[in-house]
Picture (spheres, rainbow, N blue to C red):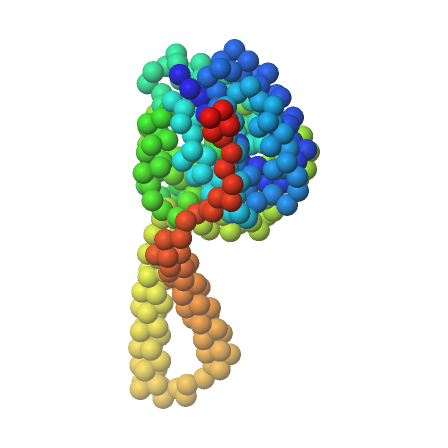
Length: 314
Ligand code: UDP
Ligand code: MG
């Protein structure tokens, strides 16, 4: 058995060594069968130097994939999957919010319950603000109404996957990747394991509210075409209303000879319809933009350097 541990790192200079020591300690019993795949996602600090220090002294297999710039966590995860060779593949953050000790528990679950192919950790107690939590709730309700697959609210990217699940994930060629959706889309039996999220060891989270918002939109566009249907339905409803209004006006003018009045009504109706039109064009634009990105077929990331213990030994 070989276990690959994928660790995306972006500006984690103070955390990678801590993480590595903690992981070595937690995985002590199976350490001969572990490889670490660190992705340096264009860090602007000394993360790469810290990773190289680990690489130079490590007794276990280490791979470092050094990106040419910051391509985002999704790209880092994909690079990890593409370079991991393990029969089991774990994804874990470098900031120690997710304690590596849980990987052993996950392995145990998969070994003891052969019906499961994947373990996803979820936070038993959420440590986030009420407002953010509210928006996240709304997002999951919305996306689950719109998509055919269920995306579980609290399930994180902290996962252990069997090789066949990794292969399934790699078989999806899309460039606009939304991992949470992809994990659900590929199917397989997932065991949801509670875990307690810890405070970040050092540094700050890279996710601001607006980044999360953009990520949420990406997720919806990547996994559902319902917004397009809604745009069409709004169009149809407005069309019917305008026909009715027109009829009423014509009849009123013919029978009672009412002059056409109500400039303010007209102005506000005009604004309303223009607004809705722009909204619908915006929705359409989102899909078009995604299509455009996909059609360019650019790679999701560029590797500047690749370090592997195996190559070091040669
Ligand atoms: N990360 C990354 N690229 C990015 C942003 C984040 O590789 O562009 C990594 C980061 O180093 C960490 C993990 O993804 O290991 C989760 O990031 P973060 O802790 O900022 O997210 P949060 O825990 O707040 O969701
Ligand atoms: Mg974190």
